[in-house]
Image (cartoon, rainbow, N blue to C red; front, side, top):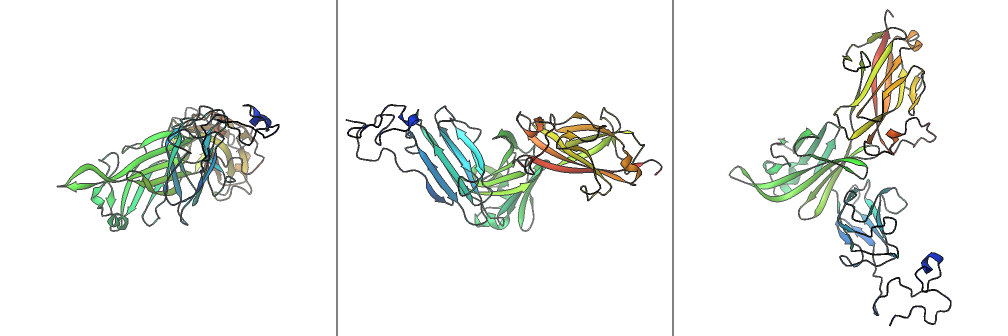
Length: 431
């Protein structure tokens, strides 16, 4: 018989003792059957390379008041890819949850938090060779738990992926394929009509992000593009659908850059490749506030105080993204926008009283106008540079929705993807 607190003095065995901090040492919120084994099995630990781990007792109920830390590591120069195959936690997200940290301890930045049976926060990858995963449960309820799989990256001499807002480029070394007994002729992506080009050393797929079977989704506040490279045996020139291996490829817009994921899987993930890239934006003058007719003249000759109309947009239209104008600066030197410069806009705040915003932070483009200023009288040519911030359109708390926000710290905008575009020169007529 379970006899909580027997001969232990004034400690409490009531359910609220954890709130008051006076629980007896043998207190349990649920009443387990008597056993000589530890009711709270060991969990967490140091894991290396690739493998899987799960919550205590999975797929049976985990215990309450669990605190498990897994320290994942890979070889120098590699990264770690983590995916959750199953998540079944208590409905209260502040009670039972999983936290993923981008580094060797919980002191590093948090990549995300997973709770309940959330299927939108299931994929994480590290920026270094380390990743830390923490599972916590409280005393109010339990569930079946989770199962996670992790893998280390391939090396750069085996394959890579590069992404921009225009294209996904997947490069696989033929020497790597040969080591697996595969031929470049065996490879195809989710749309088998999209074929690679082959050189003496590598196989390369290049295609826009919105074709070739590429999928787009919003995940953990990011925009994610995914595809798969498959290899199958060829028989009489025809591709059979019995998959021999699978490369999952993904491009994900991180807070301030675009990061690619490229990992190999058979029945489970056992390798991956990561890389970096950027969204592309362009800037142009237009003839009027309708923004129908672009101006291609270079230099663009204007009159003093003439209204100039400017549009900044993502090269590839995407209604799931918002583009916000953070800072626009004029300078006579296209390579120096710090000395002898003039601010039109700074941190989303208007600095020039003729600056007018038509839209910013609400679409994949931003539009504004301003008057040609006296700055042109003392300089033959003037160039315009704008820093933009790109946010998911469904994130209503993003920087794109906050408008003017004087920056107090240099790192204030570091949590969002940024890009810089330059336009010009502008020249006064008759100068």
